[in-house]
Length: 324
Image (cartoon, rainbow, N blue to C red):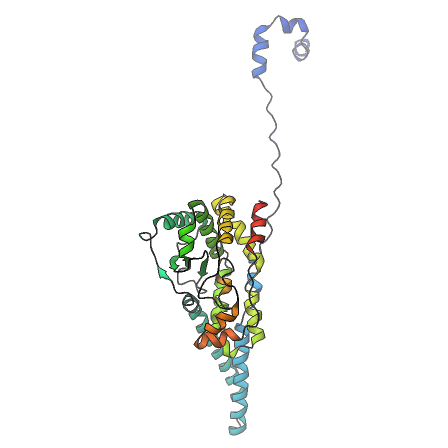
């Protein structure tokens, strides 16, 4: 016990007379306690999580078909006296409305793709673009989209995605974007497009615009306007910009790209109220000229849209990015 106490409390003389112990003791460090892991706040749900509560035109077409079935069933019931025909025709009418909507949904991708006249390109045509695109797709987990280019000398990009998930997404770049942007700027620009593709909102936007374009004659203007405005949330644009910075891990690249877009112009051809929300930045100066240029079914579906879908100003998007 005495020896134990002496080891616990050695005198000053014993410390000085034992250089060996004095040299080895510093190596006998007590294990340091591991710092408690910092509490990480749970990530807030992005507006994309609200897709489950999205506004859809499908119930309207089911109701429209059911009403048609009621009308036809009522007439046949009065003529034949068979009341059993009424519920059958209501069900048939609702089913017909569903089929019509699904066919319009399936056609929406090709309809909205045809709105912009673009030439498909590959890696041989633009090796720098595809080098960046393939690298960013690998980082973001997005399949390499079909790429096209327009003859516009301005700086913008157009995106569509298949609501049924069968076809590859399409990204159309303006010729001006590929010509004036430096590599770092183009990287941020492409990442912003991929962030929109990955968000899950692009399918809904393509579907809604395509259905209104195809069946606009049968949709009340107020309902069509509500559907278009509901599928485009300006907060989604800000979220996509932030996610684009996460893809490149270099926000100054996207900032430089948007600064160049502001210095140049984002106004492009092939724009009307049904596809304005599918562009990366505001692609028009006024809708009046676009409405006059619309033709066929596109003209009738365009005129039912009384208000325009507005992009956030590039200055606002730049201010947010500079705060990162």
